[in-house]
Image 1: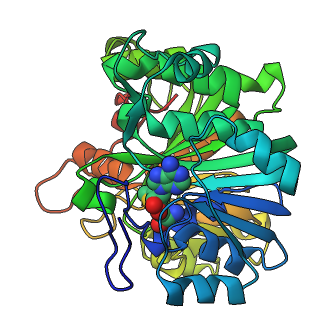
Image 2: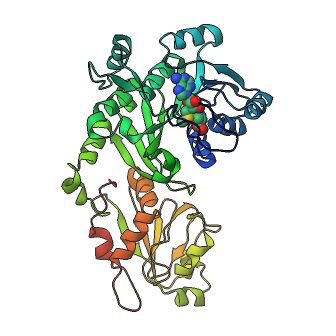
Image 3: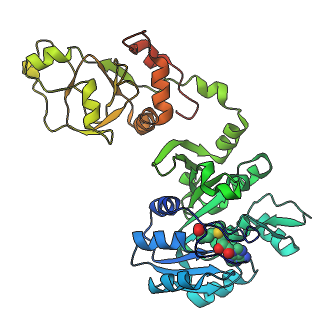
Length: 403
Ligand SMILES: C[S@@+](CC[C@H](N)C(=O)[O-])C[C@H]1O[C@@H](n2cnc3c(N)ncnc32)[C@H](O)[C@@H]1O
């Protein structure tokens, strides 16, 4: 059972599937506590380890795997200062042995094998003690959960863990109990759903999970869910408790949440009072539909303040925190940008959405996502020149993931 140098997979029985670089980089980018001592459980060809060293060059890294790693790759990791250990992570005494020898770690990173190990009373007791729905008397238990249970024992207080897990380990009908366990005992903070294509040869839907087991009880119950778009950043879906996400997965929340609208979230919507031509004639710098293209990151920093005296009629400029979307224009509709700094007038072809600060980020992330773009386009009326009405924007039901 050995990895080859060339292939991104080794033996399926040993769960040897290499993590694509963009996923490894994304996983490391979600760590919020600077890693000092790191262990990579099931290091394989080092995708996670390499991404971590690139981001945190001063971290001390230990890689564990119980299958042979190709010599050339071992040499490269050792040259980067990684210590490699050949050991079975599922062995009952492994965490104790490791901690005696290397101490507890600030960070555990892991893409475990998505395979099974023989159940016995010890394995059974370990998983049940952590709240996992480990079927009593079953012949086999999930190996990924045993990796998780052992990782927890190897972590320093204040430490952080980042795992790649199949969705089937925690959020499918038979494993919902596991989601509660991850939230309660492991301090689950983030789930980042990965596209199906990531481990296509393993035919499995996966997610990155970030754990901070020492979070306080007040914040422990909620975690944030994101969707990763193939190397194109991540999209925030919302904040959930385990119970809410389970209801969401079972489809029980749909009718309640479908009635959330921008208006019910407390957002004020207004459009500019003057046309772009009028403003331009008066020499007033302003934001028009064509301005969106000047802000490819969808974050606007206005250089100047506004000069109220020059307008013929009073108008309210867009200010810090406002979200701007186009009101008309077949080619422009569907965009969204947020004002990070400064203020500026907007033309009558642009809507300004002022949302309560607690909802602002959610709304902006939604409106600037693919789903939000489709939502805006679905609101557009008009055969030739498409436009969105104030009423539709304020009252249209938002997808159940917002609010
Ligand atoms: C999904 S691969 C991940 C490899 C690498 N970390 C990555 O992300 O590309 C799982 C790794 O766990 C190793 N492995 C499987 N069973 C193991 C066990 N019982 N103890 C330690 N490592 C194991 C496999 O050899 C493989 O390298």
